[in-house]
Length: 283
Ligand SMILES: Cc1ncc(C[n+]2csc(CCOP(=O)(O)OP(=O)(O)O)c2C)c(N)n1
Image (tube, rainbow, N blue to C red; front, side):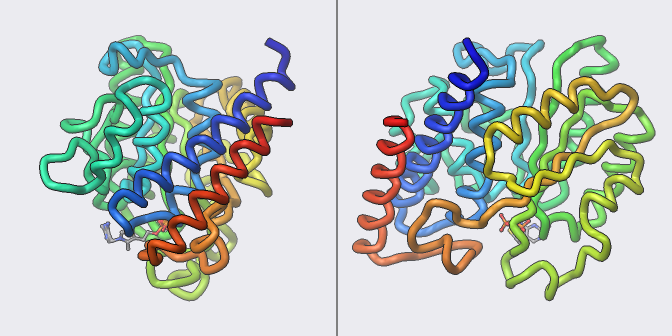
């Protein structure tokens, strides 16, 4: 397949992930729309164009791993995994209801394809680093991808893990920072400034850093991963400058961490997302 064709396929997949994410959260009526929509494009690239996985065998030992350390973006993971065939995507419409396999935050004991349990910010980064070290010790060539939030980077544990990963030269570890500039309580800059920037911090910790001005651009993300694959002896951090709530009519303007729109606002958002999906498919 030509690259242009592949990129178009990934853009369509990203739009489909957005639509399914909205339907999933909409089934409950409220939830973490903002930080789910911002990572849809990176998830599309990973699961649609990069990762070596087998939906029929989610625990295949040689698979690539993806850890959503910002576990509240679970709905975007569920949409992605469902669309990839790990389970019928509609099953996720039981989000966070009693006895569901789709809790608000990702849980490896419940959802096929979820590699590690997350939700307590900072911990997913540490466990992802552990998985990358384990793979390396076992002589596996597989990659571990981990998503951290920019607010999550206020957790000291992120930096302990970053230091460890650099020390052990975990070059099969790729960390995406969802740099949407907002956390739960407001703008990251107001809550806890990042000084010279999150990328500069990872650089200081000995990582290879790739800063993407548009972290919602699938081609830029895809190219960054290819560059990261060639870097030996250090892990790579890809800073995604994203838009929180991207594509959700009620969440994008506010950049809210979580949303509880009215039923009419849900209808409007899902219709707009369906139209966006149809438009990108028609390109
Ligand atoms: C250790 C810990 N402290 C606090 C929380 C509550 N919490 C959940 S999400 C969140 C904000 C995260 O912000 P960010 O990482 O920027 O993610 P985004 O909202 O952009 O997806 C907070 C404080 C938590 N889950 N874990």
